[in-house]
Every structure is written in C-alpha cells, then in structure tokens.
Length: 119
Image (cartoon, rainbow, N blue to C red; front, side, top):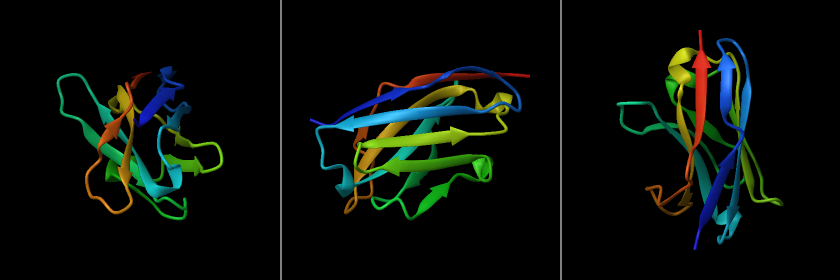
C-alpha cells in the first residue's frame, strides 16, 4: 500500500520561502512520477507540478513557475517542494501525490500539509 507523508508546512510572510517534504513508502519509488497538488479554502484541488521518475524533468503550473522547484531523492524515497517568493494566494493545503510512470492519473495522495502566507 502506497503511503505518502508530507511535512514542512507552516506560516510565512509574503516573499518568504518554505520547503515541503514528502516521504514515500510501499512502492518502488523510481517507478513513479511524483507530483504536488494544493487546495485553497473554497476551491478545488489544483495541480502544482511534477517531477519525472529520474528527476531530470519537471513541470509546473504557470502561477508558480520560476518560484517553486521540485526535486527528488530516489535513494531516500523523498520528494521536495521548494517554494520561494511566496504570495498570499499560495495559501493552501499542499498534497504530495504519486502516479505510475506508465499511467496518466495520480492514484495516491498524502494527508496534506497546511501552508499559510500572509501579506
């Protein structure tokens, strides 16, 4: 059973940085593309970005390009979301997610970690 556990959320001021971590278990990590999603109050869950199984390729939603960076460590089964130049609109619960490299849908999500950015 795939388990994803996030950590590193918290409160920040606009312009600050935060780093989120996700530890994965119950899967062959290198067989999975890893992603981050977020859900703001009253809104649907939004894709933030993802990183390929090798770590060589990453893609992001336009609203975070140039500010957020995803990386992974396949030896430690971890994925990191580095968030710089935070904005109040980045406030949300952030979720780590996993999908098989051969699949198109994310099938496993963590429990989420809260990020709150104040102006």
